[in-house]
Length: 361
Image (cartoon, rainbow, N blue to C red; front, side):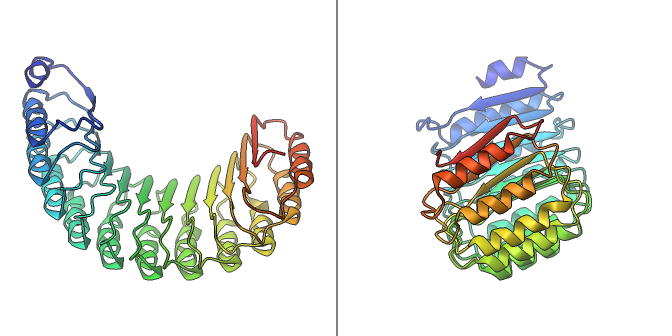
């Protein structure tokens, strides 16, 4: 394959998917990295090595290929090392070093899910390597189920992200990073509040059991000042210390984001009730540009038909709404009658293309 790629000197985009090819090892990444030498017109790279037998040495070999001076036109990198359990901080550091010559890079997506050898030091090394990527507009980082990452790691990363003044989209996935707390979200909030060009913020801290209302508030306060935002997605699923207060604070923060077109809120198995949803929904009145609403409150036993009634009254004001998805599975006090009433009231929205209310009535 390496020899074949060498001949494609006019190639501008590479997409290779080796997911679950368990016989692919570090030697494979070396071949791919070597092939980059002759591809000086390459603009986009997408490589999926999820569940392959890749170690730090394999990441280093690939990174050395990325670091070649020939890749001066590269604008987008998407690398997936999910479940490559032998990758550690050293691999992350090697990758960071390989990115240093890519000064025109605009989009960076890295997945290190279930790489349990990655710690705070790895995030620090990676963050330090971001400094030179001043053209970066999109950054997406996944460290799902990396249990040794703590608040300090998130702080180290956030400190460097805040220097990327051209960022338009930020996507951070820390599902089941159980050592991250409200303090980590404070550092993150302080970082993103200065990124005034942001249009999309996607944050996932599902199953981070030490996050409370204060953590959500730290994020909410940061979002409040980014008036250019068009898309927000917040996932705090199964964070059981989150209550109505978090929804109230979030609602207050959202009021001034009048350009917002899409909002996704995932709070399943939290302690949110009708009061929290009422406070949130009442704060949404000013967001007349909304086109997509996606709420998940599965397993919130304090939510009843009253919440659906409040949401119905608010949603009818959003004349540009195209998509609504609401999940109230395992909310025993939400009835078929309540769901049917909400569904019928929303049919009046003339631009609405899809309504999904689960469980179906």
